[in-house]
Length: 274
Image (tube, rainbow, N blue to C red):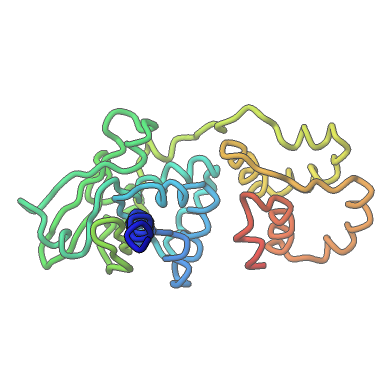
């Protein structure tokens, strides 16, 4: 009887060990960056654009994080959310580059594919990024179509520090400036023809849809989320009418957070923070 029990237990133990090993290899970029307030804006846009999910699905990845100041520079360009997604794709490499590897690049330079290239959305080879080991130990990052100095006169993005590394699954590093290119910055159409605000208006939620259209960030977030599936709790016109006096007293950020809370499937992180 003991032998029979052991023959049953051994396969179960093996399966348990395999499951544990698989879990240990998993990474979550949202949780990693949440420990560093200086990357909160970058982290938010990885979630909003669904790039966080793409990062988490890949077993070998490098994320070039930019601090809140650098993200403010990007957002000052008033790009659509879809264009921001393409720009951020340039910051995600389909290979592992930890600090040690970056400082020991063969022949001093290499070229790697970003997710902008890997997804097929980049024109030609415009989604590749050059990594160069420069004088003084500096590491530079330049999209293949951009010169050593960006159009606005700012220097190329350089390696600042390693944030977290899990060899050879994910490396999160900080770089000094946003990586971009004319191709990534090109106006990008919505991935779907579904007009969410029109659908809501037709179903008795016109007042709520008007609030969304008045906040371009929320509208872009909802529209982009259609690609991955979303649920929106849409209040009726009468409900919105009774709440408008209180809504008008909210700050701009408060209004945005409130509207995003009506879409828990894609905006739960932002909602919880508020």
